[in-house]
Length: 215
Image 1 (cartoon, helix red, strand yellow):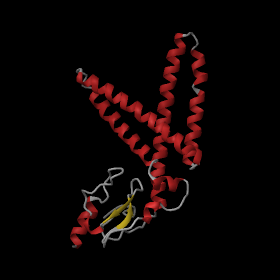
Image 2 (tube, one colour; image 1 turned 90 degrees about the horizontal axis):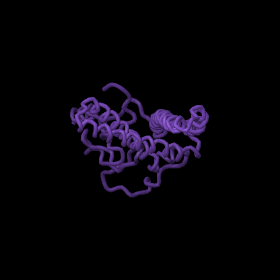
Image 3 (cartoon, helix red, strand yellow; image 1 turned 90 degrees about the vertical axis):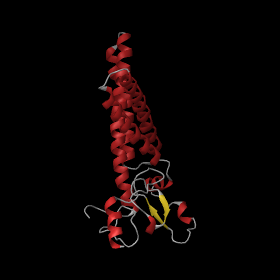
Image 4 (spheres, rainbow, N blue to C red; image 1 turned 120 degrees about the vertical axis):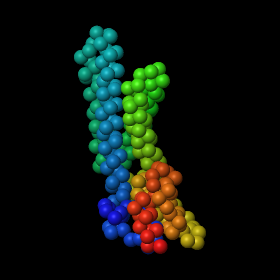
């Protein structure tokens, strides 16, 4: 096997070559979410700039648009900086910005899908790309409602779900993609099993194949 296997939930008996802590997993997810937030913020600022420009040009004050757009640009920049540095006040504003971007992408996806139905074949590619962007943004928003991600962001203790009782043969493990704490049966995991929160695979094909070989 190649690559860092430490962040994955793996069948019992297959030790990863490099163990990754929950905090390291959070750091990876947080970096990805911060990057998405930066892109979504930029897109929203550009969109608002276009709206202001079109509206104020009609009123005969095009230069005013350049002044007004500075406000959302500064606010967006502050939210991104605060979120990247794990400032508590930026947690939900960041989620709101990503949600707005997801809504914007979804509307554009529907519009391009409509154009495709009308016979514009080039709109199909845009609909697919924007649909992917919509799904990615919604997924990042969902992270903010998960207690494990929130606790790690604010530097709090372990998730309360760890107090739940396990059935015989079960153990707790964290999804490497969204930090969801799951009760699993390690010897029954397969490459088809997915996290109920983010829908990503819990075990890769390589890990599952390695486990079958060792059986």
